[in-house]
Structure formats: C-alpha cells, structure tokens
Length: 548
Ligand SMILES: [Zn+2]
Ligand SMILES: [Zn+2]
Ligand SMILES: [Zn+2]
Image 1 (cartoon, protein in one colour):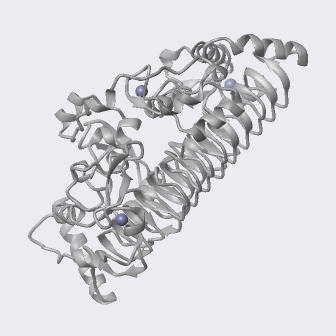
Image 2 (cartoon, protein in one colour; image 1 turned 135 degrees about the vertical axis):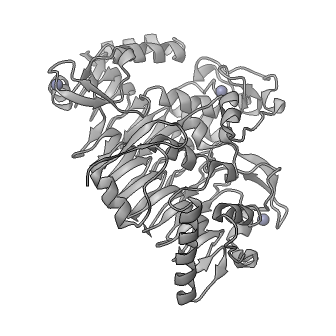
Image 3 (tube, rainbow, N blue to C red; image 1 turned 135 degrees about the horizontal axis):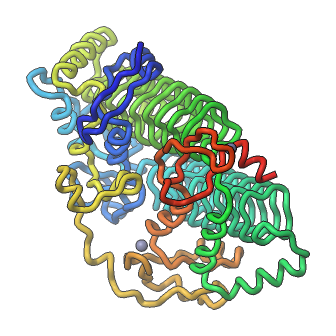
C-alpha cells in the first residue's frame, strides 16, 4: 500500500495517509479521513469547554450551579448530583432512526433535548467549580485533572497536591506557575522539570535543589544562570531578585533560556516518536503533551493509550480508539465520541458512561448496551440496524467523520479549539463557526490592583474585584490560592485564568513539527522551534552532550 495524498475538504491543504494509517483505518473499519489532521483536531476541540463556567440553576432541583453551559442553551442542564441520579432516564428521549434524513441532523435533535451535566465529574469531593475532573478533592478550576487535592487553576494534572496556576503536572506538591513537570516540590516557574525542589525559574532541569534561573541542569544545588555559587552568594542573588517585578524576571528567564541550545523535541524515556512533550512512549507520531502512549498518532494531552489515532484529552486504559474528545478510562474500539467512559465498541456518543456496543447516544450514566439514538434494541436488531445506518451514512458522506462543528453545544471561542487553534471573530463567522459575543459585565472596573510581592498583599485582596492587566477581564483571588502564594513566597497573579494559561503555554512552541537540521552536527531533525525564532536547536545526541 503506497502513501495516499488527499486534499483537506476544509482547508484545501494536502495531507498524507501513510501505509500504517491505512492499516489502522482498515483495522477499525472506517473510511479514510477527508479532513487534514489539523482540521480534525479543530473539529474535535470545539466539543470541549473547560475554561468558561456560567452560573445558572439546575433544571431538576433548581440549585445554583456552575456550568460549562450558559443559560441560553436549548437542552436542560442538571447539577452533577441530579445528572447522575435515577430520577431521569436517557432512554425516555429515544428516537427511531429515519432513513430519509442525514444522521447528524437526527443526532443534533437528540443532543438538543437530552439533559446535560452542568459539569462532567466523577468521584469527587468538594469540586463544584470544575469541568471534567475526576477522583479529586477540593479542586477549583482545574479541568482535565484527576487524583488532585487542594489544587487551584491546575489543569490537566494528576496525583498533585497544593498546586496552583499550572498545567500538565504529574505527582507534584506545592508548585505554582509551572508546566509539564513531574515529581517536583515547593517550587515555582518551572518548565519541563523533574525531581526538583525549592527552586524557581528552571527549564529542563532534573534532580536540582535550590536553583534559580537555570536551564538544562542535572543534579545541582545553588546554581544561578547555570553557574555554581556558594550557599551564601546564592541567597544574596535571590534577595536581589525578590524586589524585582515578576514580569521582568520572567522576561529575563525567557531570554536566558533562548541564549542556550534547545532540545529539538522534548521526549523523555521514549522511543521512535515525533512531536513534543512526550513521556514514556513508543511509536507515537505527531503527538503532543502525552504520557504512556504506544503505537499512536495525532494525540493531544492523552495518557495510557495504545494503538489509537486522533484523540484529545483522553486517558487511562484506552485501546484501538479513534476521533475522541475528553473522557477516558477503559475504552476499547470506541470511535467518534465526546467524553466516553468505559464504553467499548460504541460510536457517536456524547457524555456516555458504561454504554457498550451502542451508536448515536447521549447521556447514558448507567450500564447499558445495544442502544441507537437512545433506544434499546435486542442484540440482533442492534447489529442489523447499526449496519444499515452505517451504510446510509456512507451514502451521505457522514460515516467516518466526527460530529460537525455546527452541532457542538459550544460556540467556537468558548471551546478548547480557541485555545489550540485560535481564530478571530471575523475568521470564525466567515467559516460559519458560531461565535459567542463577550458580555460587557465581565469587564467591570477593578476595585484593587495586585501588589508586586506577596509580603505586601493584604488579606482584603480576596474580597476585591480584579482586572487582568493583559485583557481587562475580571477575576478574583480565593483564600486557598493565597495561602499557597504565601507558602511559596510568590506574588498573586495579575492576569485572568485564560491569560495565565497562555503565559504558561508561551514557554512551549506551537504544536507543529518542522523539518530542520541540528545546529551542531547538521543531522536531520524534526522540531517545533519555528525557523524565525532563531533558536540554536540541537538533536537529542548533541543536546545531551551539551547538558552533560
Ligand atoms: Zn440538581
Ligand atoms: Zn486576561
Ligand atoms: Zn546534532
């Protein structure tokens, strides 16, 4: 089977289907994709909203809830407790399939009538103000995280405690303003570090303690800008920086990192992979921010996945899956789904838990199987009808495609697509993607400003309405986060949640691979460092030589 060249039906860009891609599509019995990988990612990401929470009432018990859905959505929204209860049955919204109409039109009608969970959560304690959090306690605005405790604004992290304003942390404690770190303690402003403690402003460091503003260090103590100092001199340096605005320190840190050789691609304990920020993986191609992958392609922010393609934010015991956004845990041969959990052999499902061998369903929150458009069938009826629907969908050109953007319950700029692949209002409207007009009420005049250092930040800051110094959006500081800033002696944030995440992301390259050459040995490399950045980019071998 030679490679196949196709043209993306959305962007008009050419893309390649390799021999192994073809083998995968054959194995899971789907036609070749018609969109390029980037447009497929955009389409999936429009179904996930993790950052925009709205205050509204539960349509069952009238409790006030924080919901990923605004008050103007068509379908009922239930609080987490009501959604998970037996007080409603998704099967009562069942529809018969109509072979005279396209599948997505009928699925859209189902999607707009079945009640939705204010926020999809599983097994949490005191985590109301979160979307997509599981097995956690006292988490706040920490979407996509699991097994976290007392974490605030810490997205897509696991097994962490007392962390704040961070992204992609794994087994960290008392860490702030950090991204892609593992097993770090009592530190802040770390990027891609492992086993570091009592440190700040570090990039790609391992086993360091009491280090400040360093990059690529291994097993060091009392270093500043990669130079060794005595404990006393190190303390004096820290003292001088303590009075400098954090903004300036961040700027200096970035300039320092950029003055040094860069790793072509961040891959730890991985073999035969392409992408960036890949950990403990084998044969993972064009994957970003992933852990424990095996034989995967086009994965974003996933963990523990085997033999799968095109997945965003989905983890834990996933195998042979395709075109999924959010959710996770024990899915086998699951395709075209938003938040599928333990739903093997199911396709085209939205927020379904423990739903086996089903097609085109929404809102199943208990064990079931052989359902189509929320209607239960016998095993035999199910198999026949499903085969007929797939044939019908092949005729309409729908089978093999993820849900179209226009049926997403979210507007483009409310969804994860705006974070991953931002568009302006004009670009969005031109492409026919729905756009949410921002409410003026989110931009009230601030009642206070955040001081440069934590020592002069009064307790009263918690009652103030603050305004982001970048985008003017209002935000607040909660008591639990202030406690962590004080423990770590770091300033409270001057930016809103979204801008804080953007700032963390600014330490990473755009998630796009470019063919280049090692600046040292000229060997061919793939890197995410854009050519115009002027960075000195080393292949893994040269980089490790430089580090050691
Ligand atoms: Zn309720
Ligand atoms: Zn902002
Ligand atoms: Zn090299």
